[in-house]
Length: 400
Ligand SMILES: Cc1cc2nc3c(=O)[nH]c(=O)nc-3n(C[C@H](O)[C@H](O)[C@H](O)COP(=O)(O)OP(=O)(O)OC[C@H]3O[C@@H](n4cnc5c(N)ncnc54)[C@H](O)[C@@H]3O)c2cc1C
Image 1 (cartoon, rainbow, N blue to C red):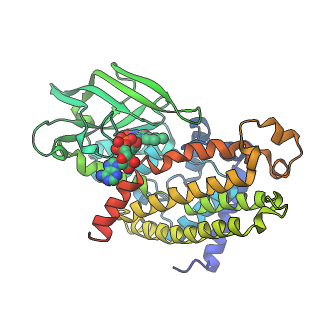
Image 2 (cartoon, protein in one colour):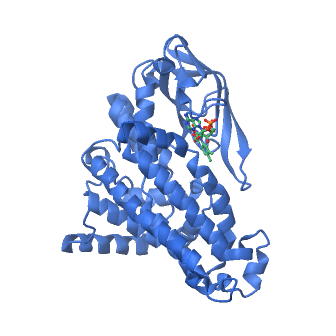
Image 3 (cartoon, rainbow, N blue to C red):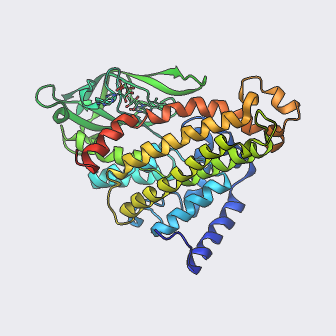
């Protein structure tokens, strides 16, 4: 893959840079830098989404007919890279990147025209109701019952680990509509309104002390049959397509920015023998190993972008990208903790007041290294654990 830019692509890059320089307020950049959890705070990501929406750049991967940009693969890459360099906050993926492609593929015309514009504008904020207590990796064993009742389904059961359910006004949800036969053959995909009576959202506080995930309880919740995406008992097919998009998101540009930050800190901090940490052979070799991994991720990412630009699915390359990307992220977090040394611990005022070199680079690097490290432990679990991704690669890529 040739990543050298043509004259037109350089002009496009300059246009993106100029837009980011004017549209990205210092408050938004700071909020992006301060994000330590899996997703950016809703208030911040929505503010940025509205700005991008007004510019027509909110959904580069969508087909143009639904509000996409019509950009080439290279333009999408340039845009993602420039956003990462400029410190733009991330957008919530559950609507734009996950349920939207499934609606485009499996939705009725009425569903497309209702939901897609609301996803683009940020009017609807989605959460994902897949996992249940006892059904994670073995997702097809899910038990939340949906019984047909007149024009509705009646839902009873619960979902767990539901990210941002406390903020979402919509959920896409897998339910059991048939108990006999193959478990995959009795699952239906529903789109539901979180304000429906009988839904209760209970917080789960993570290791990093944050409220990001929830358990959601359903007590005789009525969902119109018209809110079904795809056929009854056909939900497994919809669910699998959506998971490819969930796992196939961009990552190399952001990871390169994080690695550059670690290098900047390591250039000012000292190793045990008093020399700069960046010159420590063991540290350097670990930095180099991550750099090599990032090159590989960038190439995988281009494969996924090519597939999307051609109107296809990410395919099993999304599993490769998910496993490679999350593991590189965790290695960068470990290097950041090592580089920040004692300033990465909870006694943060010392990092600000001590006049340490870490503080000179920007106290946020030490302040946020530990929460990032703790939160990103979850990255190799959510969206399907990396062991499951390796199973998929073994079967679909290696043919084992
Ligand atoms: C921060 C966070 C956010 C999340 N957000 C959401 C969300 O918004 N919506 C949602 O629906 N879910 C969400 N999840 C749930 C996530 O998808 C599940 O946690 C994940 O699929 C693993 O399921 P489990 O937790 O039940 O673990 P289990 O399935 O019980 O797995 C336990 C361990 O066994 C391993 N294992 C299991 N089966 C196999 C196998 N066949 N081969 C090899 N190893 C195996 C797993 O890799 C794992 O290490 C989130 C999870 C986290 C941590």
